[in-house]
Every structure is written in structure tokens, then in C-alpha cells.
Image (cartoon, rainbow, N blue to C red; front, side, top):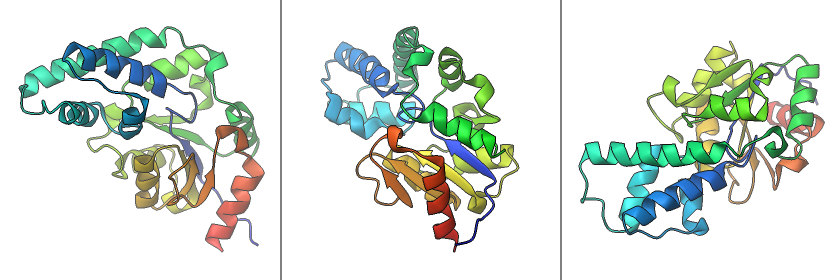
Length: 224
């Protein structure tokens, strides 16, 4: 097996670096309740990895209220949800970095490989700052840099471009179906963390199982 050059490793944020998905759920639940719609943790799985406006549309459909609001009202609702979410972020500390992630970042850095972030969250930098991880990332692609959300490949292609990386020589790490589809569509090697991610090139059940040597091994096999 040959050792193939790796240009970059690009991480998703929510569910990979830290679990802010629960904060998103609480913020959406708060908004949904204000307009008489009930959502649970199971429904929240459908919101993972997709944009704020797409999430709102799914919630409105769930309550059969998709035609009850103007686009301006929907924008205001999305802003209200974000304000709720930012309030929850006040609770975030470096202790909320998920298991295995710090060791993985250190190992990648030891190999001298650039690290990027691909997050559709408009609060990505706020989250990284709360986790004390801003310095760990060489480039961050977030919602402000793209026009198309996951599963479109734009965010991972933007991150690759920002790191001067060739997608086919780069690795993406995701926990959502839409995210894995986005990585695959960009031409990158996809590491999937969690269930229902069979389209990933290398799949694990938790971030604690992420080991740099094993990921490199899988990447080399994929390239051979």
C-alpha cells in the first residue's frame, strides 16, 4: 500500500468538534412552541447539517403551517431562533470538545497537514472561540462564504480552496448524511461518524474512535 499525499483535513463543526446539536434543538423547540408546533429529538435528526432557513421550512411543514408566514416573517423567525441558540452557547467551554478530537488535531498537526472547518453555522467562530480552538484551524468556511448549503459540495470546495488543497487529496469528517454527501460530491475522502452514513468511505460510530493512523490507512487504500 502506497502512502498518498494528504493536502488537508476538513472538519464539520456540530457533532464532530462539539455537540451543539442539542443547543440547536432547544433553540428550535423554543421557537416552534411559540407558533404552536411540537418537535422532539427524533425530528431534530432531520435538521442536522442543513441551513437555518431549510430547517425552519421543515418545522413549518411538520406543523402544516408552511403557507402561514411571509418570507420577511420567516427571516425574523430564523433570527429569533439564532438569538435563542447564541444564548445557549454561553454555556459552552473547552470541556465540551468531543472525545478524541484534541488528539486527532494534534496528530494531524504533527504531520504538518493544514486543518480546515466546513460549517454552515453562522456562529462557527463564536463556537470555536468558546472551545479555545480558533488557533487550531488554518481556514474556516462558514455560512457567510457560501450560497449553497450541504449536501451541495460548495462548502467543502471553499474550504479546500482556502487551504490551497486539491479535493481528491483531502479528507472531510462529518456526522450528518447531508455532510457526507457534500464531501463525496466535492471529490474528497469522506469519514463518517455515526449511524446511517454508509455512503462514507470510512465509517465510525463515535468521535472517540477517530485515530489518525487508521484514517490515513483507509485514505491510502481508497487511493490505491
